[in-house]
Length: 171
Length: 271
Image: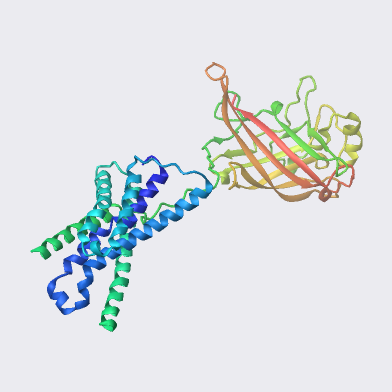
């Protein structure tokens, strides 16, 4: 990381997307037929997982648009379109497609989409383990990783609650 | 089986995540060491200087180098203008007791007058100021401002003394101002010393007043003159500063300020 702004961009991506695999497996691990039979509103769990991911992507894109708007007021923006951070930022936009009904039921695709961000975190972890990465920087990333997980849990709770209320009163 | 695979993957991810979090701990909750002191670092040595009988040739004994020392005074002219300064030509480091307060003759044939009393009433211990003491005196009528008209004229009556006579050390009460330390302690803000002492002087009063005062003593650390030669010898200096109110001693002249500053620069060697 030879650029502070590039590092901040990386931290933002880690905060928003890297915790999704853990969140995914946390829900999927306990998603089973007997449970769905008992709590019918849990049937929507795979869709909720995708919607949560899409919501996080929407929040990230919204934040980036806001930053871009503020920057463009100052002057022209220069992008290095061949830097991996730029590519990852561009890739994050595709998280919005999980709002579509056809892709909503395939949370595995969302997992595949987010795995690249988790792999970045893993690479930094191995680099830190081999004393090639600063502890302060790794500490920042891990802290943001768990804050991101918390965000996923809070948003999923909101969607689960809405689903439950809808199931209870609209059924 | 699929659930088991998912739970296994969850376990692995959870393990990796917790491990990463634990490894990233920067131990910032470790108690930080106490901050370094912001006070000025004061370094004091362990030199001890004593006069003994000031035996010539004994390098363990230190002698006042009167020729290269001085006792000076200064005050504001007319109490408000620039400094009026002068020095005392005759001074010494001796505890002049009542029995010794008399006149002493000296030969005028030599370029500098011999001291009336041995300059041995002092002791200096750099690291133990409680052991340090000194006694000093000046002959008032040897005040030298560079103006003979003043020095042998108005100064004599103003300061309540008698005219200087060449060949006579006048250590009588009328012409003697002496200081005697009562306590010497470290100055907490510098490498110097705070000296509590008494100033005894008759001035224009009927009897001598013993006034307690406080001054500052600076030690100019021991050095060697002519190091590496056969005639090398040690030197050190003591600089003592204080001020007093001349009105306490009956000095009524309005040509000078109430406040008189005294600076004594004493050099010693061990020849």
